[in-house]
Image (cartoon, rainbow, N blue to C red; front, side, top):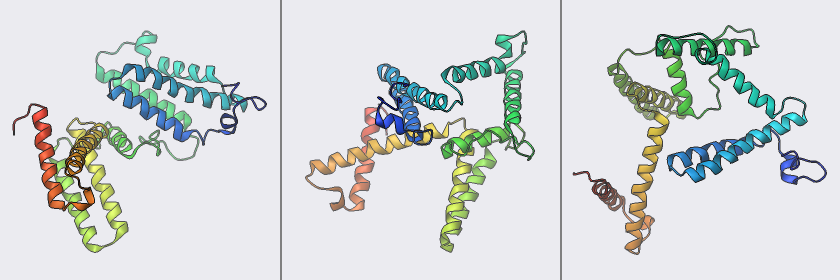
Length: 260
């Protein structure tokens, strides 16, 4: 990477990159690692992990050129963090159960956040939850964090009621025609749906991705059927497409060995 970034004989594209310009590539590579894992393709996983590591090396090289830090410092920082957060492994501290270990882990993270809090405001239990996370993931982290501090429903029934309440408020906003209110109420509805998923022990990001895959599979079935009939989607009535959608559901259930 140092050679690629060399001002005299390096690659022009690599030379002109900076921390900000690399953000899309960093995110893309992380998602490609996830995709390889979900496809259970270990050969691709090896390659994608290498691509992700390249991003770490790339950023470290840029930082080294600016006399900020280098790759050794990056590796050292995570080693220090792992040692600090695992005193039951790297020192003589012992915990009696998982709850004690979790509380100690959260306390260590809180201390780290406190040391990073450079402004004058008091520390918050939500410190460290960054805004650049995917919205579903951020919502889940927020809810998990406040739940550990007692701000949560003790059971799932009120969460179902809250989903229904937020859905009613979306309807009211829609009837009012106020675009700002509609957007806000949709956000509230999505947030409480994440809370419902959490109470049902479902990871919302994974659940939505599974729903996306299901939709794509069924829509591909519709496309295939329409194409076999020598037609195009835009030439079909919605009722026809709905019928094919139902057929796709039946076909998928049969392929999975599920009786209707």
